[in-house]
Length: 255
Length: 286
Image (cartoon, rainbow over all chains, first blue to last red; front, side, top):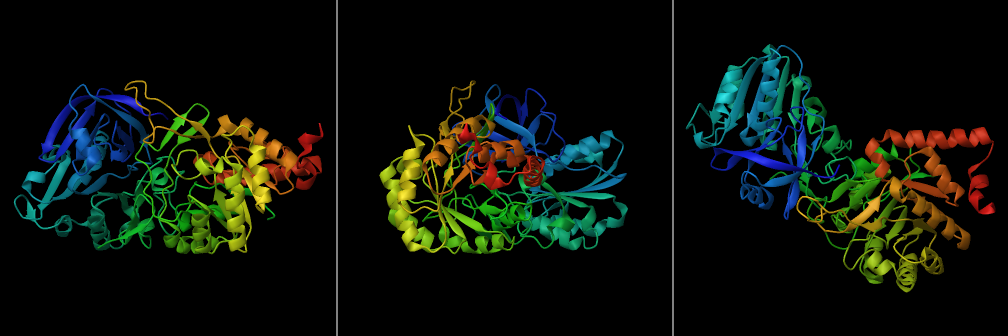
């Protein structure tokens, strides 16, 4: 598809560096799907949906900075919804998020709650100022927050919050956050990998499974169309957690 | 090569793993993403736009350079079929440097990318450059050398003949057609690079004509590429004179496409009690 023109209707400041941008119409995505966001004059980047008509964005580079310069009434180009999205299953689910990775999980939680699923959420942030969607998650059910500096909730990484949960209790576990955090969580959920759905990030360009820049080693999974949600047992023994590729296709190893 | 269906350059060719996956999906040969002398990140996005009848792209020749690609070729070769390296440079010396730096089963010279400054069609639209570069690479390697041609010229046969004089083992036709798309809301060209190349069903009739013209004047094989998405398209290209065909844009439907095209070609030949050599160039008899 050509990028469609989406008008920004409302902008909500979530944290000092994170904003939610609401479009004037729903794009009818499934939770876990993404869009290719064209901020005219800069670049096109993949972004998860945090609402049917919205995305929650952290200011990290040129394109997100250009987006932050836009106001209500301005517009962006959008291709999507793209990718597979999460598969909702079972009666009790656990959402595990890190930082702005909480965004697609909050959308998933909203949808799950509407269908009567029991939801527990574990989210880790760097500090109290970074906490995102606290109310939204709390309204869904049980919420455990961790912060690296202990300024809110449990002190420590998201994984430190796992100790107060019994993984047997959950039919599905949904995971999204920085790669190092996701790897940590998966390693601590040994034996449960087949019920963890992880939303992962790779360098995406075409968003239609053609250019090959997002392919995972060693099986060539095209993250842009066969992902971005991939079951953790399928991530074991892949490049995930070890390296990813940059825009030229060269590998960048985890420091 | 018993199976005439190949993966075209630039499609799922960035990593060895994705090439190997294509190799195991029923193709006869895979071609890598184009590799150059230095790493390139490519253009800003959007790099791909869907338009009427196909796709418009300007990736900007992103590649990690030939120095960082041999391990990918080695992985791709585990697929058990020939791996052809698509290469580019700004002059004969650079082409030779890249070719000598890679161990592959063949080379496809990208003298046809329509949107790269100093590379591709900018040099490949002149017969004299095509001949010189082909000859230089041919002299420096022991494996087959194919030349991928641009259709953005008055007469593609001139380029084909130049490649043949330079010693090419085959020509590949066609690369994408110069094109652009403009965002109506902002008035801005959509592609980050403003201009790009059109691929997909819209360019198939152009490709068929180019293959027909080239096969009429060349002694070396012509490999047809451009908009093939069904077995009928593949047969049409072979009837025009193609020795083999490459599939690109249509792969957005998934890897299963290879099987359906190869299967369709086989049952067509079976139904007609004909062989590939017998139908090759059949359209030129009329």
